[in-house]
Amino acid sequence: MATRLVGVGELGETQVTIVEDTPHGTLAVGLSGGEPFAVSNRCRHLGAPLGKGRVDADGCLECPWHSALFDVRTGAMTRGPQGAFKPIAGVVKGTLGARKLKTFPVELREDAIWLTA
Ligand code: FES
Image (cartoon, rainbow, N blue to C red; front, side, top):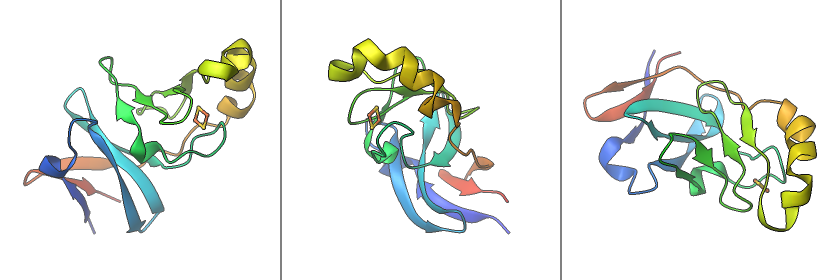
């Protein structure tokens, strides 16, 4: 049975939001290049809520705390944390980032993003 997660019009300019109480717990849900996605909400670095981040021009999900990037299709960290953490970004990506975000099947229907399984 499909579960409605969020209306596309509710996403705002960040193109991602937090949806609580789904069958898979709290998720970061949004649009990347016009395609819907749903991933686990906690950044692999220090646990920031990814649904409070943004989708960048390349369609990657950017963490709101230290700007690590995630591929929303695979859940992989594609860039480690920036700012004060930049000198160890590669190490973080190769260790904590090696555990991918969970990804969940979704579809666009009736101007909303739906969890399909
Ligand atoms: S908590 Fe996400 S990059 Fe630090």
